[in-house]
Length: 236
Image 1 (spheres, rainbow, N blue to C red):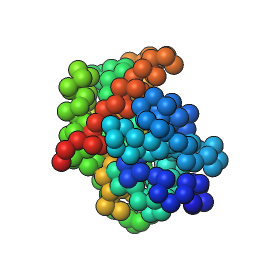
Image 2 (image 1 turned 45 degrees about the horizontal axis):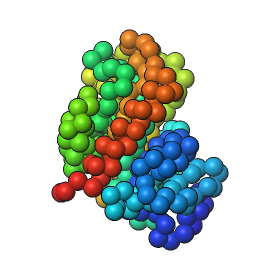
Image 3 (image 1 turned 90 degrees about the vertical axis):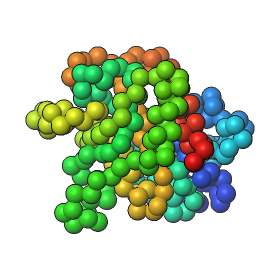
Image 4 (image 1 turned 60 degrees about the vertical axis):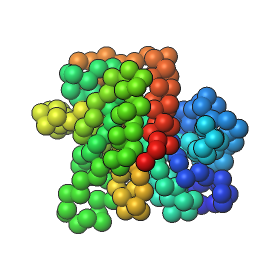
C-alpha cells in the first residue's frame, strides 16, 4: 500500500495498462480480463487486476496530465514492481493525414515541461518508446487492418492551450498528435529500466475539426486495448 494506491503486495501485475479515466479502467477490465478484481479505489482512481489469455494484467487509471500520471507510475514501478506500462488513451490529430479513429503509436514525445524536467537541469531529454512494444503493437494493429501512424507526439501540460503558434510549429515539424501524459510515462520508465508505450486513438482533430461521439470512442478504445494486450505479451 502506498499513499495513492491501496493495493496489497502482490495485487499489481508486472504488466499495467494505463487509461486516464478510472471508469475506462473498469470498463476495460470488465470487458477484456478474466476474474478481474478491484485492487485500488483511493481518491476514486480505480485499478483492477485479472488475467488475459492466462497472463496477469492490471488496468489502472492515471488521471489527467503528467503530474497525476507521474504519481501513479512512480508508485506502480517502485512499490509494486510494474515492468511493462502501456498508456491507452485519446489524442488530438495535428496532421491532415491522421484521421479520426486512427491509431497513433508514439515513438517519441515532445514537451515543454514535465514533472521530471528539473532532473535534467536544462538538458532536452528525448523520451522514447520501448522498441519491442512499439514494433509488436504495430504488427498487432496491422494484422487487424487498423490504420496506424508511428512517429512523434506532443505531450502538453495544458488542455486549454492559448498558444496557436506552438501548435503550428508542432504541425510544421511533423508531430502526429497531442495528448497530456506520454512524455512523463516514457521518462519515468526509462529512469527505472522499464518498458513503456503510448497507444492512442484519435478522438478529435486540431487541423480539420471534428470529434468522435461517445459511442465511437468506446468502440475505438476496445480495439486499442486488444492491440495493447497483444503487444505486451508478444514473443521477444
